[in-house]
Length: 246
Image 1: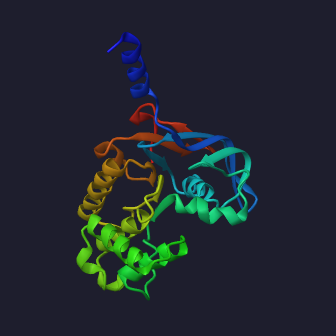
Image 2: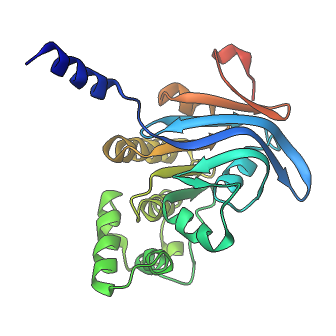
């Protein structure tokens, strides 16, 4: 192999992963009130990033902006190839098909079985063939160890099992980006550990970009990742642990 070919190969290997979440000088507002200003965030494919901050610091507002629930007031932002400044309302469902969102309170439809919760999402995101939808639902339930719970109602499941269903739901469309808003906040310590171990396993296998909101210091100690901090109306990268208190 020639030196040029070797160098070309090295250059390809060293090429950075694509950016899937980017905010530049973004101003985030809710009901006309500015929550955060001059927000700069970059997350590449395969990165795992925590977003820490006190209650009311703007963490959830960032998630809502990234899913185009809150309009971007100023600055620039892009998620999975969609500009949040330019996106038209009719295109928002297409953006959300590239995202997986996991909430603290699970947000399952309590009047539908586990499988029907998943089928509802697949139908809403454009799947047509019932056999393919059912197969995909079974596939993601197996991924989270709940293949035997498809016919159960959410109230028949433990909190940890409900969050596993929520994780399965988030991965239905093989999302490029996962946004997790306090996904272990309503779980006991042992269950939270099980959920995080599962989540990290799936992340390692599928390599989406992940932004996880949390106030749990033990999470980012045990499961390392980049750490961003929301405070005093801005977002910054944590340089060392001692520079922030929740």
